[in-house]
Image (cartoon, rainbow, N blue to C red; front, side, top):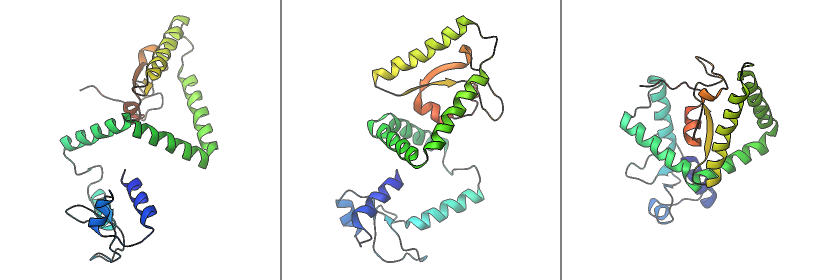
Length: 200
């Protein structure tokens, strides 16, 4: 995470000047000369071949998003590699620890928001559960959630129960029934969000 790296750099040097060579030797990916770039930005630069000013990089990205909305500027192969790196990080202990700390921090900042979100989610599931659901179907749903819990106890990955057709999708809303449920990895479920995945 670039933001984490920048915060770590700033907390370590407290605004002091540090050369590229010194920063790299200490394991940092940025350095600070104390001098503005050619566009007048006084901030850190990337400790790579380009020595990019972070404000300049941010401005270029913002300009590209305005000129090509919805276009990341990456090829499909680059997007796939980026997504795979994200999956690997999400499954790692470092990624899990980051999410736990992030959730704890957000909960501390606004506990009411988190509680309200949980209550809203419960109500959505209840609303999406049809009255004609049989006792057999209810038992099948319990088994699906039990499978998720069993996989999570193994500790290798985090698993979620996903609604194949989201119960709060933009195009269509699904039901809370066995045929619309599946157990998938937590990272894949978060990446999917409320989108309806269309088969190729």
